[in-house]
Amino acid sequence: MKQIVISLLANAGGVGKTTLSVHLAYEMSRRGFSVAMIDLDPQRSLDVFCGLAPAEPSKTLVEVLSKDFKGNWSLAPVWKDFNVNVEVCQGHPLLAEIANELVIRKRGEYALSDRLKSFPLPHNLIILDCPATLGMLNVNALAASTHILVPVQLEMKAISGSAELVEWCISTAEELHLDPRPPILGFVPSMYDESVAMHRQYLEQLPEIAKQLHLKLYPKVRNSNEFKNASAHGLPLQVYRPKHPACKDFKPIADDLAALIKDRKEKK
Image 1: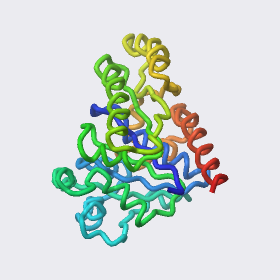
Image 2: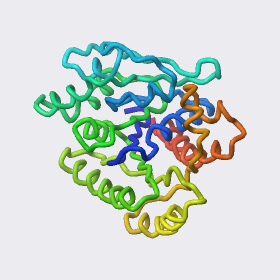
Image 3: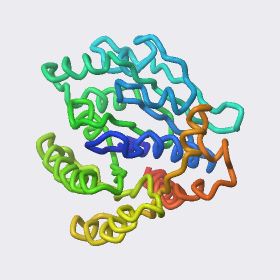
Image 4: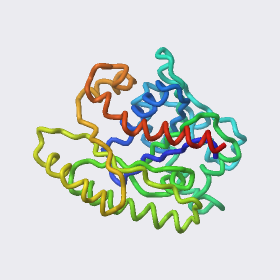
């Protein structure tokens, strides 16, 4: 696979997966990379965050994962007025039914991986925005990924769940015989509010947890109502409020992704 494919994985909802997906996509495209976001969530989170209208199933990931897919990816361009190259393969509620079908289909765990190999996308970076439950769609994401990123909400349940997610990634990759096994780039503390004592406490504990799991810990992504305001307009914060301090929170991750893309190009 010529590009980087990164899964945003978490085993809980509301931890900032889509926020991270959208803002990384914009940050990378602003650096000159082409980006495709694939929405594996039946709740169509990316539609909302990117200002896209719901699409017919034939124009979404439902078609891509169907048995009869012929390679005609339906990709919706977003933020065209801001000189970026970002496209979205939209989600659909029927993905929940497709997930059940994949359980009994031959190579069902590899459906998305097979599509990306047989009908490759031209983008430098593919971001997989995954559901909050570790079902068949997330298994597909894992099998298709070159790397994984784990957003972590600063709550005890979310932190303990993230450690369990790491174990799930390792065991599932072994069961799928993935070679190489997609590495976890790191934890991303998300939705951080400095005024909340619990957030400050857990942020202090995360470095030791990450160290025990042999994972990188990225700087925090702060919480702000402006993220919600931006998504209500279908825009990333970098466009909606370009001088907002949270716009810089995505730079360290984007730096690593840019280095990975450059390294992959050089090896090719």
